[in-house]
Each structure stands twice: as C-alpha cells, then as structure tokens.
Amino acid sequence: MSERSARPEEATEPPTDRGGADRATETFVAHRNLLFTVAYEMLGSAADAEDVLQETWMRWVEVDAGIVRDPRAYLVRITTRQALMRLRALRRRKETYVGPWLPEPLLTAPDVAEDVELAEGVSMAMLLVLETLTPTERAVFVLREVFGLEYDEIAEAVGKNPVAIRQIAHRARNHVAARKPRGAVSQAENRAALLAFRRTVETGDLQSLLDLLAPDVVFLSDGGGLVQAALSPVVGAALVANLLTVGLGRIAGSASVQSAQVNGHAALIVRIGRQIEGVLAVRTEDGLITGLYFVRNPDKLSRLEQETALHR
Image (cartoon, rainbow, N blue to C red; front, side):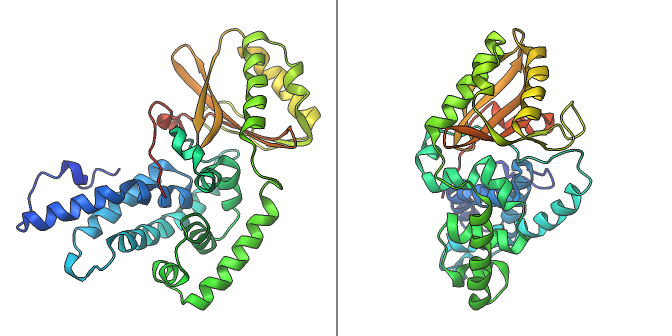
C-alpha cells in the first residue's frame, strides 16, 4: 500500500470517536480480501490493487456509518470506482511498456482452486482476455460474472443506469466468450504440461515438452525491460520449440523448479540459487499447450514468497 497514510491495522492517531473508528476498521478488515480480489481482477496488478485499497480505506473512514445499510456493498462500490480510475491510468502506462505485459502472479492457497469461478477469473489466461475490454466493460464483467452483483448494485458502482449496465454486461460476455479457451480449464492437463516442463529443466530432455505444443501455441514473456525476455509474442509450435530449446538449454542443470498454485492454477516457480527467475503458467486445450506465460519482471515477483488471500 501507499505510505501516504497509515493502514487500518497501523493507525496511530485515534480519532475523537474511538468506537466508531474501531467499527470502521473491523468492517474494512472483514472485507479486505474481497476488496483486494475485486481490485486485482480489474487491474491485474497486486501493487495497484493495494493502492486502491488504501484509497478505499481513506474514503471509508470519512463515511458516517449510520447511513450505510450494507457496508460490503458500499466498500465494493468505493473500491470499484477507485479501481476504474487507476485502470484508465494503467492503460496509458501500458502503451509504453517494454514487451508483452502479463498480470502480476499471486501465490494462492488451495481453496482458490476449489472455487472454480474464482480460479477462472484470476487465471493468467482470463486476466489477459479482460485486458481487451474497456475499463467499464471490465468492471461490469468482473462484478457480475465473478462476484454475482445485481445490475442495480453495479450501476451504482460504475455510475451508469441499470439498463446501460445490462447492455454492457451482454457485450462484455460476448467479447470474453469469443476469446477465452473453448473448453473448461483442466487442472490435470495443466499439471501434466508443467511436469513435462519441469523434467526438461531438470534433465535437459526437451522432447516430452515439445510433443505437447499445439500448432498455434503462443508464448508470452514479461521482462518489463528489466531482464531479458521476448519483446513480442512468439506464435507457432516451431518458433516456440526453438525458443525453448535455446532458453531451457541455458538453465538446465543450474535452475531449480518448484510446483506452486499461482492465480488458482498449477504453475512453476523457477529459481537459480535462492533467486526467483520467473514463474511459468500454461493454458491447455485438448491435452496440448496453447499458451505459455513466463513472468520475469522482478517488480512482479514479490507475491510468490507468501500466499495472497483471495475471496469472493
């Protein structure tokens, strides 16, 4: 979070109404994981989601609790508005981003994977699809499809009338349906693909991995201009196989690979010594790898040392 003001749990200057401040803090903390999840799904960035929560907290403590009938809905509304403003700023920032932009990966607990809708919503593949929506479409889709809010609640959150929200939701659903994987994500297929990748790193034998590449596989690597990474998407089995042959050949034997739950799905954390070099997530369809996502930007790897709690 930003350090412009204290976090709820770190507040040091008690307001006049100590009891009211305590209740405000308790309410905020009770819903914090939900609010973080809303902000993260809208932004794809944990750092920016934390800043949104800080802005939400600053506004929440100024609210007269006596006029708030539903604190959860009120907090979601504040968070959504703050996330929308930050999302518009992020879109401008991403225009100058070096190479492909990938979401900030989160180490997540097993219970996230058990919530199918939540796991799909925070997956690398879905967050990339959401990047193709307008900010308002993304907010409406996330609030409706992932969190199940009613249209009138969403209308209050984004500042539009319910009729317009229904139209935006319909448009966003069609847009997402046309771009997301055709079938349900198979955790078993993802784990098999990642096992082949792990064997390649540990043994140098690429064949078992190359056999799993779909003809139209896409490889995206995010270095953010800070570390070496492909500066554009690599498309097609032959090109991706060549890239993996060169890249994995360099680290085979020196790297260690740790299986982990990242964004609700199986993934691999790659280390050289104690240093995290990156995290690899995959998308599979019909047993073949259709998407490889390798986040190497060091600014995006801090959330891989401890679990991040997500909640709907």
